[in-house]
Length: 193
Image 1 (cartoon, rainbow, N blue to C red):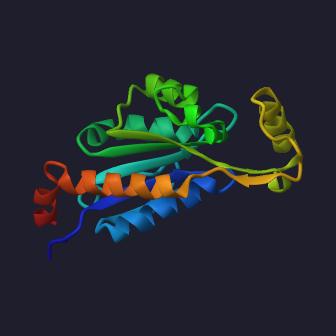
Image 2 (image 1 turned 90 degrees about the vertical axis):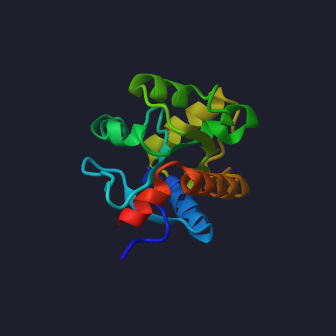
């Protein structure tokens, strides 16, 4: 029996959990828009199922200026499929706590990642993460405090601030769901399932 809804593979990579929360919010909102999703943690074995998935959303946190190395491996292994399907890259970064740093065209970590992988996702978004000093191990806390000192952010070790703009995450999921539903070939794929 054919499926009547497109399905997006939503992949998340999270150090402290915020990217996972953002990915889940995207899954929930796309469901409200009539798009199914499979949520998976990024690993060396993560792969789209060409018979099931019509698109991919990659929600990845930046840690000390770097993406999870498995993200580049995923892109390299599945490049032909990715280039033929709608795709979304969501970078989750504390540097995006200011409006100017949420622009993917100027967000240095996103630009570097896309240049190094030569991937051109259908849509790219930069979302602010969460600062939660009390939950960090000592070395993470010290490193993040140093970065915050350099970028004029909060350094008090008791600080907990969720910078994520959840309204924007919801809008982003709505936009991507529409893009997936309207993408060429998706309805034909549904009829073949």
